[in-house]
Every structure is written in C-alpha cells, then in structure tokens.
Image (cartoon, rainbow, N blue to C red; front, side, top):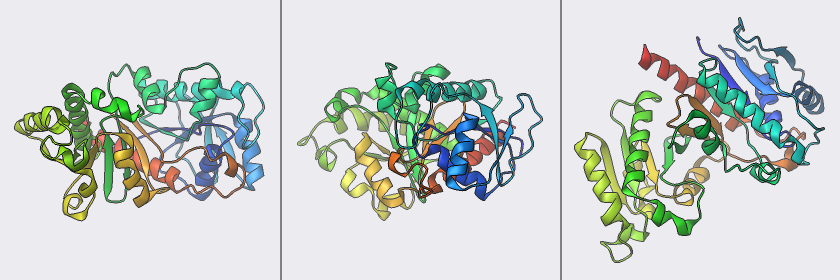
Amino acid sequence: MNITLALTPGEPAGIGPDLCLQVAAGQGFAFPLVIIADTELLRARAIQLGLKIVLREYLPGGPNPPSRAGELIVLPVSMPAANECGVLNVANASYVLATLERAAAGCLQNEFQGMITGPVQKSIINQAGIAFSGHTEFLAERAGISKVVMMLATTDLRVALATTHIPLAAVPKALTRELLREVLQILHEELRTRFGITNPHIVVAGLNPHAGENGYLGREEIDTISPVLDELRLQGMHLTGPLPADTLFTPKHLDQADAVLAMYHDQGLPVLKYKGFGQAVNITLGLPFVRTSVDHGTALDLAGSGKADACSMLLAINTAVEMASTSKDKKS
C-alpha cells in the first residue's frame, strides 16, 4: 500500500497516547503509520500499561517499512515539561500544537497522505494563551482553506454539520445561502472523491421545529435552505429536504441516504453518538489531505489505567486508509 499516514496522540495527560499504543500492540498495518509524539512519553506510558512496544524512529524520506504489530514508528517531538496521567499541564500546550503543525506540514508536502488525530483538551491550550477552537479550524488555517466541513460517521450513518462550534443563538444568522451552498458543495465533492460514491444522496435537515411549518415556526427553510437546495438540484446534486429533524433520522429517510446535513452541532450529533459512540469517526472534509479523528474526548480519569477503548481510534485509522486509497485511485 503506497501511503504513509501521520498519527498525533493529542493531550499527553489524556488517553490519546494509550489508544495509540493499544492499537499498535494489537495489530500491524500494510503501510507506515507514523506517530508524532514525545518518545519518552510513549515509552513510559507503554510500561504503565504493561505493553511491550518497540519504538522505531521515523526516517524522513524513507525507506520506512510498514508498521508491524508490537511497534510504533515515531517522529519525535519533545515535551517541554514533565507529564502526569490525568493532570493537565499548561506548559505542554505548545507540544500538542507542535505535533499537529508537523503532521499538517507533512500532509501539505505529500510526505503523508493523511493524518489521524487523538483527542486534545481545548481548555488547557486556551489557558496557555493560544486561541484554539479545535482541530478543524486549526488545520483549515494551516492549509489556507477558508471553509471546511465537519462530518462524523458510524455504521450506516454519516452526519455533516452546516455550523459547528458556535452558540445556538448565533446559528440563524450564520446560516446564510452562501454558507449552505459551500458546505453542500464540499460535502458532495468529498463523498465522491474520498468515499467513491458516484452520485451521493444527501438528506438535509431544516433548522426549525417541523422544518418551519410553512413559515409559522421560522422562515429559514423558505428564505435560505430551500432556495439553495433548488439551485444545487439544477446542477445535478441528489438532495432531499429540508426535512424536520425529529423525523429525518428514521429508516424511511436514511436507508437510501449517503449522508445527512444537520444545521447545527447538537441537531445531528446526538443521534449519531447514540447510534455509535466509541465506534464513530470524526472527519474533516474540504482539506487538501485526509484528516480523521476519534469521536470522544481526552478522558483524563482513564489515562494510564488500561481501561480506555481504542475502537474509535482504530476506526479513525482504517477510515483514513480508505479515504487516502480512494483519493489516490481517483487521481490515477
């Protein structure tokens, strides 16, 4: 498999390093999976977890053979301060961002064909005086992309978001025709090129209860959402909606859908996480490279305990492989 993927473990005091080590202990891959992390952190955590992991240093420019079970290929980035499981240290916020910077730079230079990210603790990064709203926005800025789309996926369900981490009161104003058009175009194109779906069927939620009920419960469906859907249908997109969110997530609508577009974060994600929490993957669409992540947080209380479930991390890796391979096939 002619791909190399980067892996960042996220917050060092959380379960991210545990998940990377657990996955590495359990299986190998048909390609080099390169973890960008502090080598001593990985060595100490492996001992704490009782895992025998060989840490092999990454060779920029190669050759780097495929990752074997029981080993990690490490691109070392040093932490500036000591680390303790479950205890956040503001001094290590810069380390977390440095791992992301290196992974993004490698993706942009085609050194890596994609990146998988472990969970970060946004609060400690902001406490360090670094404005950080999340992986999605950080990577978009590094790639020079004005708009990306957040999508979570689990078995038989993909949910993308028109708006992400903004207050609910700000959603109606943010939900413009221009925004919705751009989000749908990105979602449609990425389903084609990253997932190999020739003519994606996207089901679109309304914003208001009962999708506005013909304007009695809000006019966003009439003034914003429906005109954009009509416009894009004329361009050949297969779109259904806007549908009331309370009945959209039923087999009648989902059985033939490739993805759902929700208007705001907590409209679509509770359903997806109820269906597949811990077995879902977070995907950033619209970047010039593949990026996937786990669907959960840092779980500071589980760090170093050996009780963290690595299913979402493994799924994020496998999804990145699928997307990177599909993208390469499209280009060839």
